[in-house]
Length: 319
Image 1 (cartoon, rainbow, N blue to C red):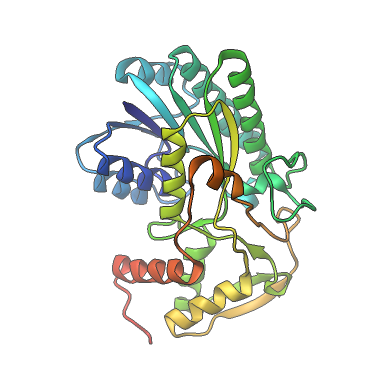
Image 2 (cartoon, rainbow, N blue to C red):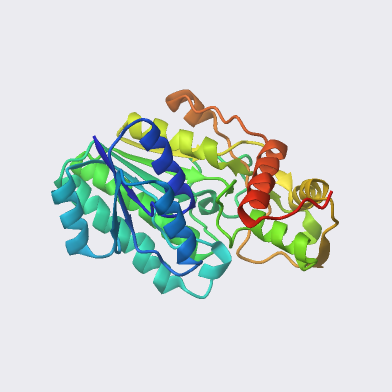
């Protein structure tokens, strides 16, 4: 049963590919190696997968290419993880995010329904909830007021997924990721940026005096949730995929200070209009329906991330 992973050279996609390979499942990866961050990192991810993966370089917006992938590789399942990400970067780039995250998703949905695939699992984001008053976040929230183009584009993609289920019977599972981190993480995301800043003595911006709260979810737990969703198509469902234990940015940095053995240099700055005060996952639905059970707490996860970083970049211990 061949699984297509879009964005399979990225952080989450490549970790999912490794997990499926461990289960001896055939995999096709479609990735355009976008230069938003260093494409060499993505090529390293692909190289680590070995020769048992078919990798196709190209865009999910290329209708002819997507058609050829489905036709030539007998795709039965899709893990759609390709996207332009990063909330703050999206603020001035709404049209670009709509083109890739919405149009690209519809291109895949259209191919998936024509080839009658078994399961379409779509990566989304907790950012779709915006500054909601319902905390923790629950899937039946309207999610009608995203704070930036990135979450707006992902919410739009979710709605297209429902329409393709309603019209064509396509099984679509939407997975709203909560602040994914861990080894091999994207260099533009806070967990890696904080490490680099502490090591270099560079200033870290503390939004709202470090009191913004985020529900950090370890990469292995995210991958486990994706595999569960691929294995159990359920019509159309939206799932929160998160740990369910938010902490403040200040507490997050404190953990890294202890691990690295060096104080962070911080400066207080106002909260951006694009950022909610908190992300907080109610994961009871995904636990109940899919058996999701996150295993890694934030202290353990950041320790694993720091140890990987030291090994990957040959960083001597400061402690």
